[in-house]
Image (cartoon, rainbow, N blue to C red; front, side, top):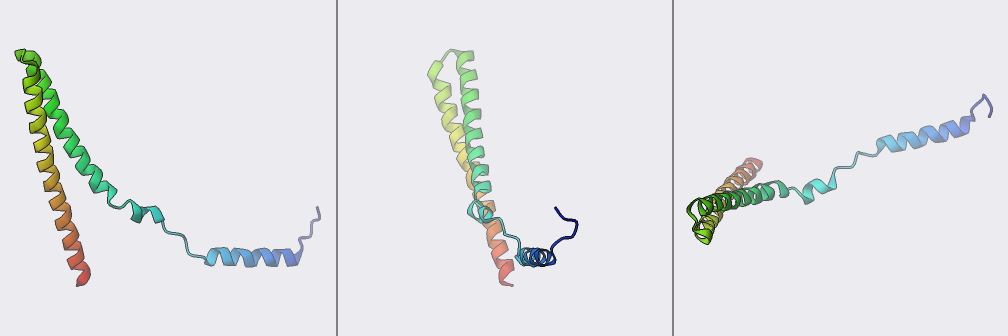
Length: 107
């Protein structure tokens, strides 16, 4: 290996570096693809939580009263209904937020 670098190779390398630095950085293409996943998972968790609370309360009441399938069925259905209600409220809030954002973009 020599101590004197080849000026032509250095010039070619400098040109390649200039070209590479001129290329704009790539945006994250997956962000747009999964942009609705956050609100969707939020609503799924709300529904699941409502049902889980209903099942736990139903199991506790069934074991306490001895009426095995009664309370678990009733409270599972009530938990599902509560989860759907909260999920619909969240969807409405997201929709209002999107409409406000669209209205602000028009101005």
